[in-house]
Amino acid sequence: MKKFKRNERIGAIMKILSDKPNHIFTYNYFTEMFNAAKSTISEDIMIVKKLVEKLEFGEIETIPGAAGGVRYLPKASKLQLKEFLHNTCKKLSSPERLIPGGFIYMTDILYSPEIVTNIGKIFATKFFDKEVDYVVTVETKGIPMALMTAKLLEVPLVIIRRNNRVTEGSTVSINYVTGSTKKIQTMSLSRRAIKEGSKVLLIDDFMKAGGTAKGMNDMMKEFNVDVVGIGIFITTKEPAEKLIDNYIPLLILKGIDEENKKVYIEPNKELF
Amino acid sequence: MKKFKRNERIGAIMKILSDKPNHIFTYNYFTEMFNAAKSTISEDIMIVKKLVEKLEFGEIETIPGAAGGVRYLPKASKLQLKEFLHNTCKKLSSPERLIPGGFIYMTDILYSPEIVTNIGKIFATKFFDKEVDYVVTVETKGIPMALMTAKLLEVPLVIIRRNNRVTEGSTVSINYVTGSTKKIQTMSLSRRAIKEGSKVLLIDDFMKAGGTAKGMNDMMKEFNVDVVGIGIFITTKEPAEKLIDNYIPLLILKGIDEENKKVYIEPNKELF
Image (cartoon, rainbow over all chains, first blue to last red; front, side, top):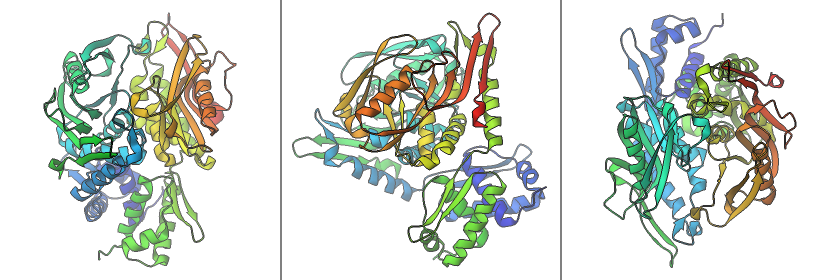
């Protein structure tokens, strides 16, 4: 059987915990893996715990008792959050992103693995204690950030489709009205996608009046689940009255001045 | 300035390298972070390198010279690959997944953060040495696995849309014919999504005759880029003659026997 020195065990434990955030590993898992006494593993985990705090990598939580163990919560610190959101606003304000019609080109940001990992970390940090069972989004642009949020919460991702698909079995479809353009749209989701009585977190990339978010919320009622939160990457300041409440936006788009090529966007200061 | 013991440095280096796969960190990055001599960091990295091999976590590569440094390649071992693909086949063969019309319900698998992380690891392992600049997929079901592949290769993800969007600026649209149902479909991608002369890796979740993959390939020609590979999660055995070649499938669907509720699917043995 392979033997491991303390510094090897520390490196390995760090990697294993960090690869599966929010997953509870028992102490036995490590005593067997490293062929070491429980007291030794306990000391190792204390070192990892302090290290994670020292470097602001998040939090290591030890759960006492028979069903106990240890898990890693990759929480974003206030400073990391602030820095990330400010940097993202700076990127989004760049004049060459302006598209005729008063839009901002942002798909490169919404699809950047590094950026969506950070967004996922912020949403996960907000909802670690809500015992989320599923992260739900609607296709397409919010999928990457929703996936990273689901990964960090260690729960499945569910994607609501815009159209009905033959490969999904029996589905639930609803019509909803977009808040700003007042168009009737359809959403559809497989019956087997979500178990009744679950707790779900809704994630979307952009919200104006909130029609799509309200549609997602209505869809969830059809599945008899509890929406424990709604995370939105960017919300517009206007209209101030949205079709839903209890959402958490990361950024607030205050306005676009097409003539002078200026974008007014800022972090949601309530997060700091 | 904070001081770090060896076991703390090992834990931290392991975490930092593993959080940003394929990213080259200079030795200076660590000497500054830990306020330690280069020789000390060198020794630390050798310990991490051996540990990663010992536990089959992939590979740590040290790059010599002035522009040198160290990076982590989370390669899947043959054994991990085999085990993962066999387990996935087992899951997919479950009779309750059969949907009228001869389809298999597999969205829960395609959207599982854990499974798509493993799929991404396999694709990344195959293409680490191809200097990929972008991972490209077409919406919707392949997005999660494409994102994880892009994350592990440390490159941007690009998503081809089925419809034209006003928020993408000027776009390139092409029509293509699906290989099996012979329907004409449209794909569209923003002009700014990919730089000319890049190397791209195409990823999709399912391929029958290869019409969609051929469409993606044709779209890439419009962007004057070099397709260095095509990774497909599941391909059907029939038709044996596909509209594209040089693709790598992970699983091969040999057939579905609806009457007896049997699914015949197996790993692509060429990968072992």
